[in-house]
Length: 542
Image (cartoon, rainbow, N blue to C red):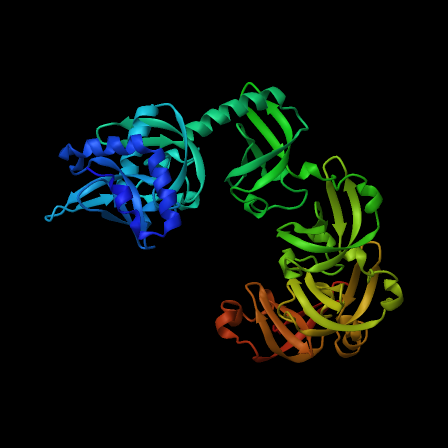
């Protein structure tokens, strides 16, 4: 057989021909060996790997001479970006023999087969390999270590990856955990490599770790009570209370999974393998010199950050919050809940009332930051001053009247009427009624004002009754109220007397409720007048 590659090199120019001829002569021993092998036709059996020479390249297909009766053509795509030079040796696989005897060759299949042979002969279970992640497949990733091998999803990282696609294109180091020679199947584990590195790092970290150290770590998990930080072999807990000097509702406000952060080692329990970490400790504690920045009685701007049944928390700066008790919110009537006055986010002015440095607590007041309406109250509401205002609330013992914002006075039930015996204000007053009163008394220290409504009129027991009603007088009256012990009769405008059952005629005394009606006109006689007790006794007998 003649030297085939030289015979077919006439497709190129003279200079290239000389170059290829020189290369071919330099490798004459390989060529002769190849030609000797061609005498054995089994060399061209399907799946056999043979050596040939590149004799042409048109940019789409590469022409390869393997010493057969005709050349074969291989797509340039199978060379995967390799430099293609005429005269270069190339190993290819016979993938098919066509009916006319032409060979179908594949460089890619040959590379794969040779790669497997190399890996299977040179690698063993337990060895480490490096490779590039090619693509996602069912159950994990395909990694190129010279040949494509399987990396299960459970073996990609120390914790199962959320999206294995994040590793595409990465060069990774892994350990061979299974080789199936017959099936040409290799399984690798990156997790084992990471675990070994983690163990080595842990041992190194344990020997060096000290309280107060600054360490860089990666957030691996976030819970309601904190975050677990991987320090490179050891996990530490960053508790929610150690994340910020300020208010933190949930750790996710401060850290995110896979975030790299620097933390301070607060405590290390070697026996239990527990590490406490801090983030806020990297910055100055805002409670240092707190008294200098917020002295007692000083007024500051703040923001309402939380509302509770007993008060509102106001932020003065990051890490510094104080409590405004519900009793310190307004000079007026104390609200049943702070939400009646404020909402979260409201800006407020507050006065520092007290600081407990040991407990890191500040007591604040909102009303103290405003002018106290009770200051000089007697100059505005001296005794005898007439006032007017709406009823804000009603109790068993009286009604509260608003005189101005933050100032209320009490109209006692006994000071509503001269003549009516009231046990509750409701017959005469209801909420939001505008009432005119007179100031009866002012207690500036206890912040109380007493009001009277009946005092706006003359006391009928001092002038009208002595002049108009005398013992023995017979008067026309109207039934005002019927009780089990007698009948109240109105004898003058607003003035009632009691007609006791003993003073009723026998026919009425037996059943006054059915024999008499409210508003009924009757004639009565005055039998007694008690000015001290303000009572008038009546009779219908005689």
